[in-house]
Amino acid sequence: MTLFEEIEVAIWPLEGWCTPEKAQMLAALIIDALPALCVEIGVHGGKSLIPQAMALRQTG
Image (tube, rainbow, N blue to C red; front, side):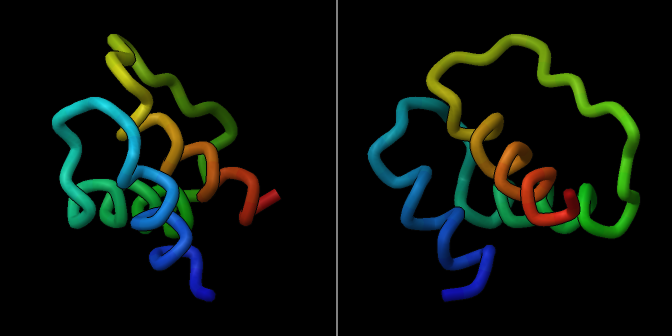
């Protein structure tokens, strides 16, 4: 299973307004940029936080 497929499965039961497409884009941006720091402001149900954490985990 690819990271993007894992993200779609992981966010499905969570509350929030982040679409699967947006979640995948957030993850792709993190994978491309390899940031030293990633900050999420205003977490409601984790629907955008979890994909970012999964991308950060993949990039080490």
